[in-house]
Amino acid sequence: MADSVVDGGAVPAPGMSIANALNHAYMRSIDFVSGTLNTALGTLGGDNPDKNIYLKGRYAPLTKQFHEIDCELLEGALPESLKGAYMRNGPNAALTPEGGYHLFDGDGMVHAVRFRDGKLSFSNRYVRTKRLEMELSHGRPVFLKIGDFHGVTGLGKVLLAQALRYLNIVPPPTGLYHTANTSIVYHAKNVLALGEGGAPYNLRMLCNGIVETLGAVSTNIEGSKSFTAHPKIDPDSDEMVTFGYNVENKPYVRVGFVDADGNAEKTILVHGVSRPVMIHDMALTKNYVFVFDMPLIFDPAVMVKENKLPFALREDIPGRFGLLRRDAVDDKTMEWFEVPGGFWVSHEANAWEDEESKKVHLVAIKISGFDLDSVWQEEDREKPYLAHWSFDLEKKEVTHRRLLSDEGQVMEFPVINPRYKSKKAKYVWVNLAERMNDDYYFVRIGKVNVRAGLLDADDGLEAVIHLPPGLNCGEMRFVPRHEDPSMCDGEDDGFLIGYAHENDNSGAYFVAYDAKTMSSNMLCKFRMPTRIPFGFHGYHINESEFVKQLA
Image (tube, rainbow, N blue to C red; front, side):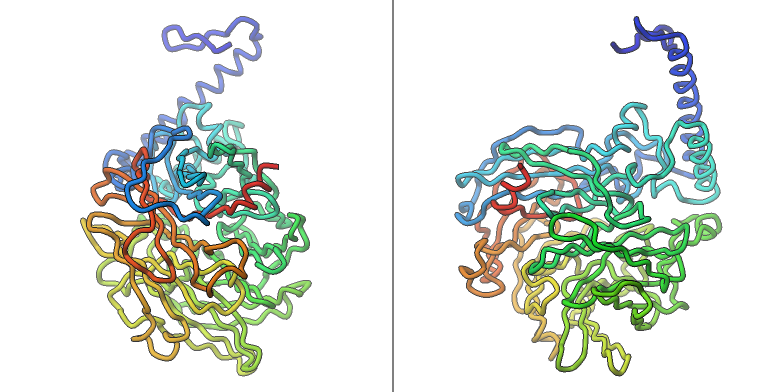
């Protein structure tokens, strides 16, 4: 039975002991004081949720969860071979922030569509993390957020958080109390919601399309509380390779190997990463794992002196790419390639090996001058672009080049046919953005011919899909046209699927395009029952995977 409230004080419900009632009142009192202090620190630091751009417009969180809503077909028809479901993860603050708030801070919310008999049904659900459950029980945010780490007041919030842990109001960091708001993957019959701040959360989509949270699962990385949002799965062996990083203690990076059944195989401690850096993604080839040691370095002094988030991208410190053999037992034979500083690798597209030339190749998004405070690049900075690096294992040399020549074009969210992960892919599909209303909107999707781009960057862009006027999209996932690879007509025989949004934030749609023809005419367009906030990464669960995750 719930407590009743009289004159603002908690009165024990029948059956509650005096000791429990006193403890309950104590916890409520401490919670009230901490909330007041946190709000005061936020006010001193200039935090104002009403003015925070990541709580407004296309980033504004939804306040409603929908249950199995049939979606109206507006154009075309759902491709007959597109089966299973599509799930996209993203931030959606469940409670109004009391202090600072960053785009990466919101609680994970999954927006899912189920494909059945040519129809779509939509559901959206929070990932019910331990963090979310605790904050809902308190009725207010109690954990530190990325947006809190600004200035002297940010330091005060850190001290307050430590005090709350000491008083047992907030639990110590265990890897369970994070937002799980970044991506979705499928492995070993499990659908996993991921965020690099902690352990994976196991989800299950029911036959009606509703998503349930089953609970947290092990990182399978010995000694690591964190788990990347971008693990790589070998399409031939179903082995998953992942990593976790921290900024507090060495070793800062650990690479984990998980077999096809979801069992931990081994963990490699990467002692070669000597500074606390932010690493968002990784890459996989037949024999190697890439570790991106770019100089986006954790530096608390930046928070206090410059009133910025405590990660600074250093131009005076080189970056490094590490190559770890997949059959290694430790990191002693790991090879490192030094590159100029001042840039960060956000998202990998493809990596492969050339056995004849003894070279390893990487295609990924390169962001120069990355600033975590703004996320999107300022106008005077070099725009994020699709880059290629070649690593000569014999000469110990690395070369770099653009795959597309347009230096003014913002590029992000690269994807390939997932069957070509760890192999040489001919095509990469990448979102292309335009600046509107002091923000960037993805309004085109480019099909990049990697082989042509390596010969001449002017020839890299093979085709472009233009979204209709007034619409923008998020990440688009490539889905092979058939589950059976032998039925597909080449690497690019498939669909690009995802959500499209009205630029004025008035609505959202599920859309599909033909990845081979790259026609700007949609194969299908379904109206969603709600606007969908800007989010991060999604996953297509094919029908076979859908059945397995139900078991």
